[in-house]
Image (tube, rainbow, N blue to C red):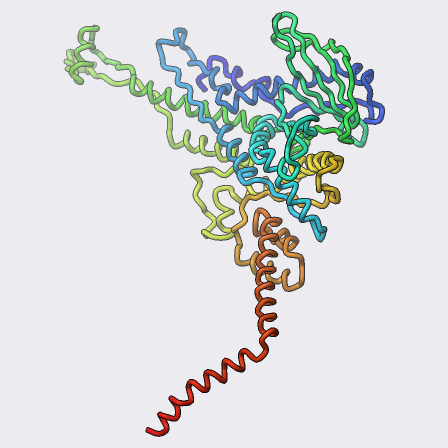
Length: 522
């Protein structure tokens, strides 16, 4: 380990272990501006701690990891010896894979169980498309996998804005910056969500006296506070209540996206492993450079700078042995790493890092003994990636359902919105990932379910054949109706001309009869 201080890079203070969940001992029914003001200093301190963690993890995701602290040992002048720093970017690769694997295809909504909500879901899907929800899901996934959680708020459209309710949503979805937003929960056994806050800079003309606006939303009111601070941040013990406004949403409009209870992202879980991998790569480059620039040692021979310069120019040197008992010789002084052992440790660290977060390695070959169906998933870590993704889906679906509750509450209170008979529990949330494995088995299961008169959308949900069961079921039903309509038209046409076929058959017989008579005569 070639570092000036072996603990400078790998000390515990350089790493993070999940975010603080902000909790206060009150219930949502006892909230008011006085209660919030009393707990505001504590809330802001906890939020500042989470922001510090987020900024560190975001820098690691960008490539500014601890490896940049590496220094060569026993070298006073850094210019005398090369200090290679190789940052391989594994956290970035892992986060990008998770974003694409979970949200590369948009999340779709369909009917859960046997509920009849197809029309309402069609409208909700249209509203989500108008809000560019697919791209916003990818954005919030980055905060989730980097920082462990991401915040979102859903608000009604402001009054006075003209829009077509049949195409445009009566609400707006905003992904909130992690550094400027927080959510507070109750510390009682219910762990209910109390309120969320958004921090905005409203006056920064004087760097020593910056004014921040803090908007807090609970299930009934929107509170406005002013917080003092400077250019580096706000003061924890400052908070001046300005006013509060009643909102009609009925629930707290904040939603937190997360993948585990402790709000831990994948970057912090593998940061120390990635530091070790970067150290091995960096020191390997240093070792190669040192080997190329090895020191020439001459035995029993005097050599000056001029002679050394001639050796460098000619690529050879002549040595004369004066004393046979002390033969002249020249050798390079090298310290070469055992590449086989180094590569073995390197690959082991990389494998552990990717396995911990459920990300398959791009350069890993399939070793499951097959190339189709479940066999393909077993190779290269894809089976584990699918297992971890299914676990992530559980909490991500909870967040989606919380958002749908807010959306439905807003839509149900709009006088012109057609959504009025649906609940969040009626909606099935579908993550579109890998759907083509075991295709034949899924088709056979789907055929059996349809023969049992299971609704098509429910059957598609059960077998997991497509990513959007709602749209596929609609298209399926349309094709069935078209086929039934064609059959009905043909039947009606036949009933309106009952003798048409008989007359046509008689006419054919008359036309063919002369030909038959001619044949008999001949």
